Amino acid sequence: MKPRLSRRAALAGGGAALAASLAACAPPNPGEVNAEPTIPPADGKVHLSYWAWLKDLQKVCDVFNASQDRIHVDATWIPGGNTGGYAKILSAIAAGGGPDIAQVELRQVPEFALAGALVDLSRYGFEEQASKFDPGAISQAKVGDTYWAVPQDTGPVATFYNREVLEDELGLSAPATWDEFYETAGIVSEAGKSLISLDPSDGSHPIAWVMQSGANWFRPEDDGWVVDMLGDASMRVAEYWDKIFAEKLVGTGYGSYTTPGTPPRRTATSSPPSAAPGPTR
Image (cartoon, rainbow, N blue to C red; front, side, top):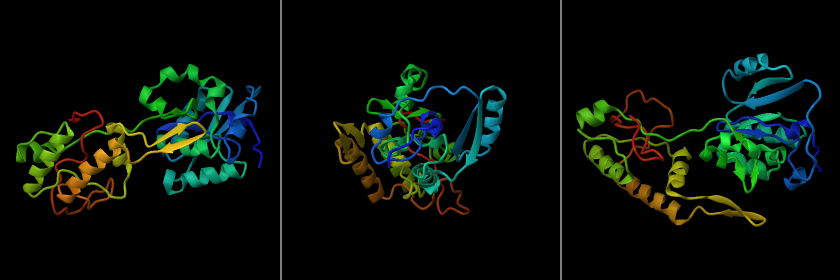
């Protein structure tokens, strides 16, 4: 199906880390969309639809709308990304509809771009605005030489811990390096407690750790993509955590963001060292 380039295919939007503009439909070859001419500015009032899983987003849109003469944004709540939101977005775009703007996580931008579901913002001069954003965030909105999304926020990794348990009861300091984390986890485990508890079904932490280690799992090269999840940086992180799990130094019994009613052991900290070593107190 040849993509139809409408006003919907030329606008920018938001994400749980990014703001992504959505194409009129999702062709198998995103290059077909890029080959179309750019859309000129509208003469009259512009109404935009914004799909996102942020609560009360319409209240934010109402504040924005009150400050604008030509642009009006209506928000629609959708389920969080992989719990149904992404499927809903892609299905709507493939059918020739969908929102003008959608919330898309940073890590999902390459997938949406490859599906032809995003607009090439570089064709609309977005490079001129790129310097206004955090370098780490804006780099994830770019695939190859093209900007496909606008950073909305980021989710930094940090360490927070229970001082009463870790410092007062055990006499330990929060680990600031991965070597210190391993040593501290061992001491806490010997005391009958768990330094942290990880949800085995949550891949967010491993992704952050391999990025900190310098891994780059997906990168464009020539006319295709290179997928490298077995590089030295990734294997270094995997071997480190294999050792910790083998020695049973951390807990794995609770899901993300859950509060156990009567935990068998007290948890001293809730997350490992941040991407920039040095715990947040």
